Length: 95
Image (cartoon, rainbow, N blue to C red):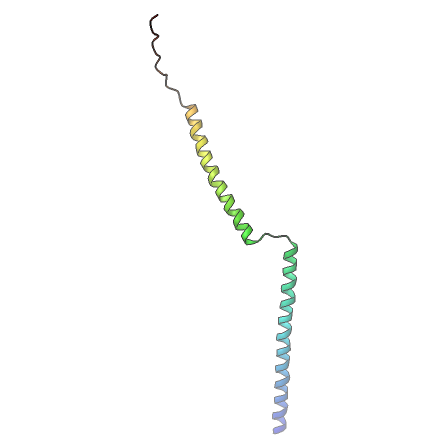
């Protein structure tokens, strides 16, 4: 009986070692894949989040100013198109 227990213990140790080896390979594989993806993304010349947010804020500010100017131009155009009231003429002073 002790022989079978010893065989089972040995088999459990081998299985445990195999699981540890597979876990180690998984971690190594993940590290290799992560480095590859980082290198690939680095070669793509992508913008950072900070740069994107800065340009987005600038675009929002420019859009707001554009809308203000459009409203101002529309108001001025409306004033130009409005019929002008005839200004009262001054009577000429007698000579």
